[in-house]
Image (cartoon, rainbow over all chains, first blue to last red; front, side, top):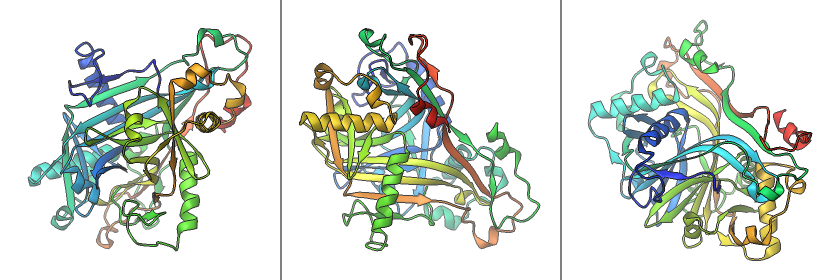
Length: 223
Length: 223
């Protein structure tokens, strides 16, 4: 994914959100691109600082407006670490394998968002419940209102974090390989092998009460 | 992905590779599981320490035996950072969305590998070329021998890192939701919506020499 065609575009003027190219020109576009990437992906990779080194773990998340929500067990070490130093949250959609005529031009097509900042622990009960709804609805759109809400005990065992989307960057690559002019006539196939995430037929839980049909909000994802 | 069913199993006795459960019992199994996850995924998320905070970026990689290889432009700040402090490399395969009868039991089924350590920059020309072959063959199996090899100039512009797989952990979740006993009779659907990455029909490059067919090693991925 080191590809000269792609540029990581900053959505804020901090050094971490990178570089100076395009600043100011593409902000609005890129904010929409950021939201689109965050909304389309299933999981993020949360990087926190633990014992002086990065620890990256996958986790689910949700976005509402300018806020990314994360949650986990109150016992989760990486969430505790996330409150005491800045974090990096990466969300990546892989769109294709780029086949080139030369080894060093192989690449990926992808949409990548990276958010930096210091998460804030939510303590207000309404804000916490809202954040959990956003996270569950991101993982399973339409599901929240059809299932049992969290109990006080469950909530007490859960850490909920909010992360502002102010400091973020977007990087995408699309299209053909960027082979050198001198390689274009080589006898080698070049192009893109598209890839995407699909859903397969839902599998009811073994202990599901007989007669409960697969809900429309699940079936809608198979389209 | 905070799920009581899942356990992150250490493949080494360091604190970062987590916990003490199962140590010694499941090492061989989990080493095979680690390799399987690394070999099945398309990209990793590399977390490095930059200016005192983690920075997580997606990148391609390859595995050969006990070594993970990474590469990038010599100008890439995160690769320079990767050589001066420990890194965390996460590889995640999402297998399903777990629909529960209660909001807090929604989860993901997944296979996750996390590797920690200090990458070493490869300087030996043969080792570098081998690593690049492993990375390209991971992204595009069967392609390396069909395309132009790297030139000296391309190699001079490329940083190649090796990361030992000694300090790694594997965590997986599979199967039904873990609803509370008291929720099992609720009038809510529960189960798993399987998800996976697929490849679609290859798209030849617009400037491809007419008559060059899609190679078998690309077609094989559509199976």
